Length: 107
Image (cartoon, rainbow, N blue to C red; front, top):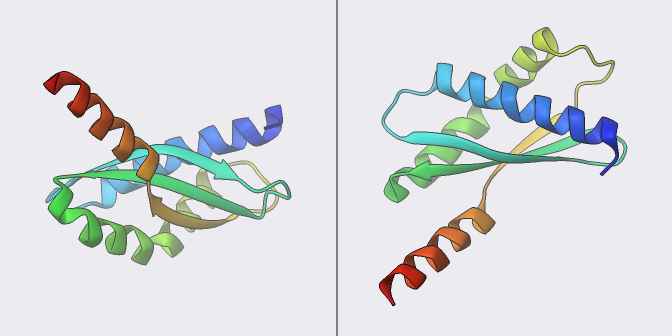
């Protein structure tokens, strides 16, 4: 990733975390784990984890419903010409890492 893309991805990650913390109803813990940006900077994917696991689909639906408001929040707090279209997904890599850690602890 280029330095500019990395800076934009990190800033998007921070802004998304702030927005979701402010907007969530606190029935679950939503954590922004990472963000990727397309080479043309027109698309961004924000990866989240949710605790407890049972609330995962509700939290993902909530976050996806709030994408328009998130984009407005990013526009207000980020000095960039074109605001990327934001998609939100569950971070499966982080979930797998936690499962491996759990299995290793059992040994």
